[in-house]
Image (cartoon, rainbow over all chains, first blue to last red; front, top):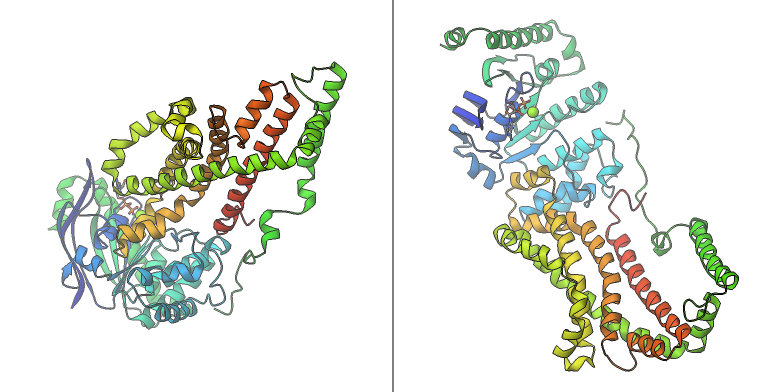
Length: 265
Length: 276
Ligand SMILES: Nc1ncnc2c1ncn2[C@@H]1O[C@H](COP(=O)(O)OP(=O)(O)O)[C@@H](O)[C@H]1O
Ligand SMILES: [Mg+2]
């Protein structure tokens, strides 16, 4: 069963077309990365899936429901580029936010928050305020919050974009561990080719103006991914493949529209 | 992730009332020096320039006048303070509730806000002689409470509304992603976000409440009210005693301000700036 089915989706903001003609299916337990140059509509597509914005055209089905119904049913855990933590709440209370809204009983909430903080290795920081944590720790709080209510679908918009390379690679490993443990499906936006290849089961390459999907690259590296995955020859092949797909999308953009249509057909 | 030590972690701010009231004594030293300097300069200039008592009495004269009449003055001050406090509570409370309503139903807010802003420009204190007549000929506390309440109402309303509506879009988007309703959004985002703004409004209101009560009494009030007392003494040329009354008004006004500032420190402990 597909968790996400997108057909013919487009989105216009005034006169600019952010995305157009999007067709995408995401299966259960997949880890799908959206990659492309900035402005190609990655965030827009993610927001459409999460029903944070409405598409101008086309259809989005999530867990056999409309995106709106899926949101109302709390099927989404969203991690934004900024951690979006509330300063007036402690770390534990921030993680508990979706549970409070879903009216979990207090005791059950407490147990779950503890478990989530363990998962992102922030035990002992329950009573800290968000601003007392480093950027990487804040982002881990927001991941714990997104996972706390076992959402079927985890939507992540460049969650590690603002972090340094080392923190980023460490959080990549943690994310994979969490993904394996939680059994959720992930849609992950990034503009790092190696990050996309390392994390994903599929990489969706997008091209700009208007935002389109130019290629879907299946990633057949073996699971679980480890530190040595990045050193395998197959890893480099796939990185090259994604890079070429990105450049192809870029060249198409510059070429005449006739060629674009041919390539699509 | 045992390999990585947590980075840049400060201790959770804790501390009793002492910490909240603020700082060590030494931090207050510059302010105390300025106060002593100003009072000294005031005293010195009056002696040096030989200023007449009825124009401006010496601080020492005011202090001794206060000391002689302290019983009566503090009683009067307390009476007026009750009016100010009543007006402060009534005006601020109404303003906060109304701000939530206007923020919740934006159409209503858009329709009413221009009138509130226009009303804010009215010199409300000018109505004091009239409101005095509305309530028991101005002889009880009610009319002063109403004047103080109206004065407090606008700054609290405007500040609260600004706090409730100046929420970061991503904070709202997060609530949307969890399918949080309006009640959840107000309780968990808008109201906490508005708290610093509300306290800014409340602190302005404390000063206005005392002004409203005292000036209201200038147009008539109970015999043991501070404004009545100040007015009566300046009418019979007891200016130093009148000044002592003004000093008491300052004292009570400052007391209310400090009380609100203290509650603010406790309520906003979560803010990065207040717990350093
Ligand atoms: N709320 C908005 N209003 C107007 N234009 C927008 C809005 N959001 C995105 N866009 C435009 O849509 C295009 C795609 O944006 P976005 O999805 O943020 O790209 P990406 O995430 O890939 O960098 C850009 O041209 C951007 O300017
Ligand atoms: Mg983006």
